[in-house]
Amino acid sequence: MCEKAALREKFKKLRAGLKSAEKDGRIAENALAAFAEKSSFFVYLSLPAEAGTAALIEELSARGKTVCVPRIVGGEMLCVPLSDKLKSGAFGISEPEEGEEKTCEVALCPLLAFDEAGYRLGYGGGYYDRYFALHPEVLRVGLAYEGQAIGSLPHERHDARLDAVVTESGVRFFPPRNA
Image (tube, rainbow, N blue to C red; front, side, top):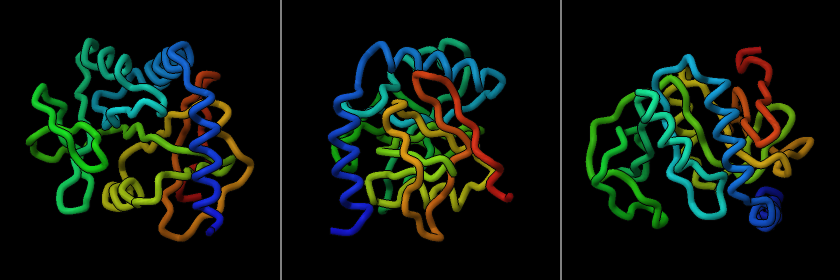
């Protein structure tokens, strides 16, 4: 088994034990405080084991922010406005039935682990890496539990670094990507 695959298995189990509504609430509060001045957000619709985004999406909408979510089309991830008309999409994840692609200021993405340099361990599909390569201007922010941190992750040239990670303990900003 390759190193990333083994790490994915390890962190899937670890993350499941970290999940709590209280932590999700603190993650949402920390994200809202850190990025309050931003007007548009690309937010994943969370699965049960992920850092929850439902309350965060609700609060962003209540504050008049533009909220977009992922939609997979032809194997690529698009950023489309959240709508009431959702369908089961790739991997059983809810997504809007339609919508024109937009570019938001901040992308809030899920992860299995993150390291001190800002690399994230995702699920292995490369959707966020490809999206970030096409949209380098978007602020890349992971949502995670503090226990998902690791000193260093294996990474390849195509792996996109994050600008920050929001956990229940606060926000970690990483060195600029062009440094």
